[in-house]
Length: 592
Image (cartoon, rainbow, N blue to C red):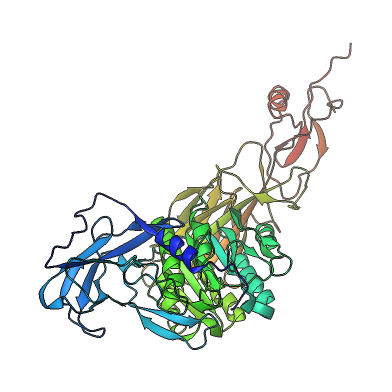
């Protein structure tokens, strides 16, 4: 993935890397010891979460060891990093005059070590599985050897194991939310190597968005190449990040989201770190971040561009790990999708380093728990993305409330949009031994108009019949579709699911244990048009019949002229339903 880019001089790179310090956390348990005439000190900075482009928080509890040989299994000495991330060895005796190796012995709870990372050309060719270990200089008494200056740290792009001098460690990946529907940031690799597959990449993302239709879900989009947002090669057009969550609970919402990246083009270079930094600083909580990439990182830095743009070094991956940790610290799951030959084989090491240790296994179908995927092509990625979208929807029922404009009539719902907050649906199991959780759910101000219910199935059973009903709001009217109070669909197959009306506002539907069922309920908004003046009554004291029942609507009315006048004054509609008739209420005039 060689690109033209801004190359810092060796002096500038050294200054930038020196700025990548570990930000202090809690007070240090111990200061870095000073050597005496009979000892040397080896001290390693250990980092966890990124707190700024050039600062990483210290991580306590990491145990490192000094080893006589690179492949030795037993350490000669160990140290434990303190609250500032300092792990220090005081070396005396026979170790003086030698050049031992520093390797990791154990990670603290909630973290995992990356003992090997993939280095080599960013294209994925000539990949190297490079052990994450560093040799010290020959140790002399009275000296201190720091990972940020005397060893480990390097500015040489010719060295695959070039490091920024801060020992990396990955957070354990949080799980996906245990519910149907989620908020996801989709991160697009727009490096030049995507090439002619760009339309297929977008189609895979489209498939992901479409799979969420019928669920209370929202999506955001980020782009990256050598930087984030990505800059199109040639034109210089910036493919702006879209961190705001867009509801994809309806087809119209999914189409609006897809339009956000439809015009994105190709840039150059691959910078995982910059993309993850942009997500972390967006100020939006996502349930999951899905990174779609076709190559290994060849750049790092969110503000200042670093790396040579053609090869993957430890620095490129270390930086991405720290940024991914910050995202995970907020309870967000990071899922890495490696797509194509450039991220096959041992690139799994780097994909796992920014996400988690569990690989996707097509035979096992572990889409819900897999941390990283290696998919041969973009077309196949679309299939797995669809499965990921519905990973927690099996045995679940979702209901999307949509509001049709007041100007529509009958069963016409053209222009319907997701309802706002405050619409409540109750659900109960009709099948003996089955259950529904929760028993009642209310839409939130998230733009989806959706609620979700988990279904429990009776012992030995795989299907449960549910009864669902909404709590109607004043002035709104239920709008049926083909006479049904709801329209339900199998979300995985997009096939219709039978619905039976249950009273004026409810419906019944069956849900299978391996099925995700999504239902849509329409209401019509109250009219804001002033009522026409009342016509002459048809008889003394009698209400005037001016129409027949309107198909698809449920309305309220009263035939008493006094109550009708009151309702007319309150509602301003002049038309109420009673006994299946639409009535216009007017008072009898006195004709002297």
